[in-house]
Amino acid sequence: MSKLMRRICCALSQMVASFLLLIATGGCSPEPPLHLYDAEEIALEMPFIDLALDVYWDYETDFGIDYNWRAEWYYGWDDVDREIFGELGYTMPKVFNLRRYYTASTPYAPHTSVIPNTVEGYTFSDRYNWGFWDLLAWNQITTLDGVQSLNFDEQASLDSVIAYTNQTMHPARYQAPRFTHSFYAPEPLFSAYEQAVDINRDLRGFVFDEKRNIWTRTLKMILRPITYIYLTQLILHNNRGRVTAVDGSAAFSGLARSTNVNTGHSGTDAITVYYNTRMKYNVPLVAFGTRAEDVPTGTEFVDIVGGRLMTFGICDLQANDITRADEVKEPYRHYMDLTVQFNNGMDSTFVFDVTRQVRDRYRGGVITVELDMDTVPIPKRSGGSGFNAVVRDFEDGGTHEFEM
Image (cartoon, rainbow, N blue to C red; front, side):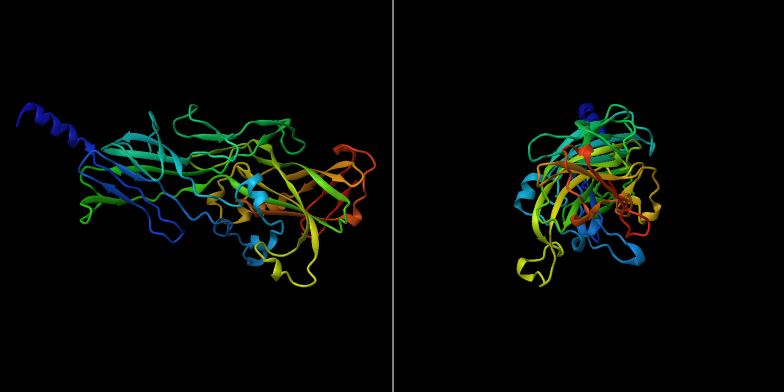
């Protein structure tokens, strides 16, 4: 064998062949296989999971009762809502950002360099050296209007990527101690992070797939949402045309400003998040998805102000690792405020304390406030500061106090 051929063979022996990472849909799906070839090519199929809200909002409420968000969500979701807000729940991303960190012979070592890649679809190919690798993946952001609110800081530390949004021109009234203006809501964000993936020379942990003539290995890596959906609704009983419209803007306070893409741990800074709302009239109080012909006789019809809010969640919390609401410990209260217009042309800001609902639904869910408009006076002068209806959600779960 010539010296050149010996050098080529020696160089090839230093390379891992390839691996394929696959996560099948559904919580009961098998873990994904990692494929290793005898060549330098590496094929990576991006992981995915079942993103149904019924699965993700798997809570137990008081007395062990399973949380049924559909039974609480009366606002519904029609074609106009989809055009304004997008889909009601999560949708599967199709393009991913991949970051690969080589730590050589030391697992869990600090990152000293990064190999960035963009993956269109679910398959990616490249080379891997022998040793340990950390893999981070998150979805490429797509929006209805082409404008992106999410920013990613990859420069402060190679050991973590931080996602955040910037401030709007709208003021922040409550529970945002460092900021005078509200922040844009983030887009849906999903991430997966696996450390110390061992590509070893003696193929420990690998099995041979005779049908495809490749070595395979299974990795424990799941793509999970790290932004959380809140569906908010203000139900107006006995409105009878008193509140005629909303200006479409709303704010939700006491939420995290950022999140760690690697871990999903939210930041400690509390902010107010700005989002949009819409008013619907003469809506039946029936579970989401009920057909018009199936609405029971005697059902109450109400006017509802609804919206869909995407957030980084509660401050200083790794929500995907929490299993009970009593594990949530944080100092901020959560207020929802929106501006409505009355039939005399005057407008007012309604402010509601929804802290308990947010803490019970720490990974998102339905936030509901109900007002009997027979008890709310019509304001005689315009301006949000002229009339504030504050609803406090007390510990007994049923007492509402109005401050005028």
